[in-house]
Amino acid sequence: MPGKYINVTDATFKAEVLDSPVPVLVDFWAAWCGPCRAIAPTIAAVAEAFEGKAKVAKVNVDENQVVPMHYNIRSIPTLLFFSQGTVADHVVGNVSKRELTRRLDNLVGQAV
Amino acid sequence: MTRPVLPADVDFGAAEQHRVIIIGSGPAGYTAALYAARANLSPVVIAGIEPGGQLTTTTDVENYPGYADGVMGPQMMEDFQRQAARFGAGIRSGIVTHVDFSERPFRLVVDEEVPMAADAVIIATGASARYLGLENEKRLLGRGVSACATCDGAFFRGVELAVVGGGDSAMEESLFLTRFATKVYLIHRRDALRASKIMQQRVFDNDKIEILWNTMVVDVLGQDEVSGVRLRSAQTGEERDLPVGGFFVAIGHTPNTALFKGWLESDAQGYLITEPRSTHTNIPGVFACGDAQDHVYRQAVTAAGTGCMAAIDAERFLAAEPAA
Image (cartoon, rainbow over all chains, first blue to last red; front, side, top):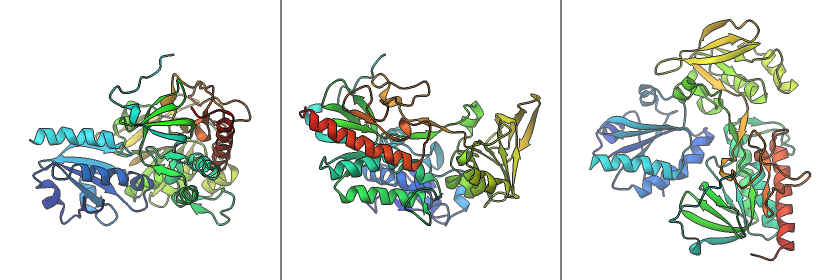
């Protein structure tokens, strides 16, 4: 399912996430983080399920420090849900696909 | 005891039927899968919320026999998975959200919507990190409170940190955190550690770690992020605040067995009870292995050992019982 989510950097964060017309789920992760690897298939599945309705973006915290620091990320995986440029919801740690879907559905519903 | 009911909208007429379903994918689950696969039982592993289990959040594993030079925890679990898959074990991502053990075939629901049925079930759901249970600890989780130094340590470069606990995980977390922190306070409520001697020695030898003996953490301080912890002396009851930029909890584990409440017998802490020298639970055909039923040893190698036992117990059970 690659290609359904986008990789976002410090440089592209504003355009891809803050200025996005649809809600964005942002996954802060790193290659060395076991729980991040564990949640990756769930993130990919959610990205596919919400294609066209919401965006799913990943921020590698090793390669990008500005955005994680701005949002005070102190734990990974952290998932932030953005709606119209602001953080509407957040989850720290592993979470089920059902739960992610539920939270993203909420935002998509509000955005309409 | 009240038993949870299955979601009404899940249609078991369409359920996949299996001989053996294994719930959990740590050393116990994958070893059960390996043995069950080699017994031609075509087992299916439902990997759960943390595929690979607790070892995926550790660094070096130095005490698993066979890895003479040590191995990284996540790598070891990939090896376990690969070995089980090589003999045909099916491995699915997903979380078992409901079980019905009232009759065989047993019924399970994955992710609240996928029905599955099995003649035998092996429970290998393991355990999760325990927290102190303080309100502010929960509020600041991910904002400086963590139970996973390997996940979060790198966000605490150049600050002082506190770790609470006295076992091997507390030693490992403290040692790991010295890579980033300027200083690590190891807070322990007694005057002696429970950790293995080799891990204790490494902590004693590390200049960056200061142990605060006979000390309890009674609150976590900070508005939007952790700014300190409030300590209480176990001897005098005196309280003081220790300014730290992060707080890591390593005080032990609770078994992931809430799913089985009402079906399986457990002890006061929630560990599943198995018949002595076996993995049989109180329901014939349901077996339990690994940390979900072991509060004594809790090692990767003992979990793998009981996982093997569970697969053999399940194989014998299925050979003696006609398929339901």
